[in-house]
Image (cartoon, rainbow, N blue to C red; front, side, top):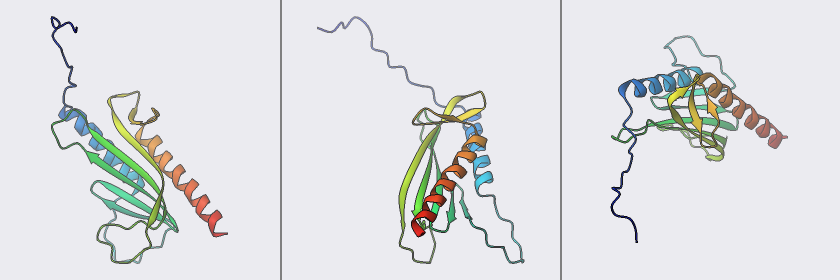
Length: 160
């Protein structure tokens, strides 16, 4: 028979503070600024790049010829005790973007990395992946480009 004399206490994690939410949002913005900087309006014709960067308020798509990386930030808008999740996905093919008019065959998911903010950040690291690896904003940018390079190499191998 269970001991009912001890009161059951469920320790709820306190909701994140505005300071913590602000720090995470600044990190997301810095990450997006590094991966897909905001474009300024210009009349000059843009030089085509090997990687097209498409940005939205909560993410970006880096599209290469036959491969892509998408990053999506899902901030927690509820009154829960989390700060949100960051999803980084590598694709084979062309990723369809919201509002795009050209028709594509679609893309196939190759790999995915899900991260959550570390509460509080530890030693410059603000992101923790589901496998426990921790990243600073700078090291996460480097990880994204590493994932893109690997997929670009695999994409080139399939073409030859």
